[in-house]
Length: 164
Image 1 (cartoon, rainbow, N blue to C red):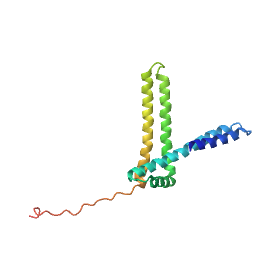
Image 2: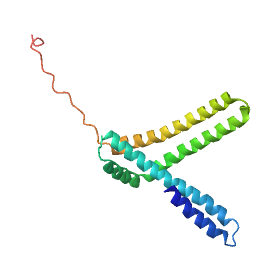
Image 3: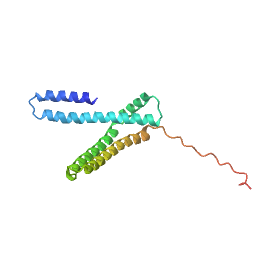
Image 4: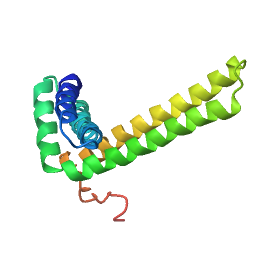
């Protein structure tokens, strides 16, 4: 899917190169990249919800979960997409901070320093992805999961000893 979207973007930018507007290709490149990011994020949300549905309902056929995820994202795209984009921006900040730390404090000869900074950065990026998945699970539990049936305690039977 990403290949198709980037191919379309390249064609549009290439066509814009032949116009008299000198900033149009750059603007189209930025807008196209943002649109592709949003589309791919929506697909990620869709499959996260489908996977959550398959696991929580113990589905054997994933087709039902994919359909349920599509219905959920169609009805609630704005809030889910907003959450995922904020988390993705936090992940981008973590990546930039990791690269800047690597550049600033790791000398070229320090393999251990490069290893520690890279592993810490990758760990934090993995935490961001888990945060996205937790957002999908939280949304699913709040909005899509069947309400749990509360069990009311039955009337306490009086014991024969207590009546004496």
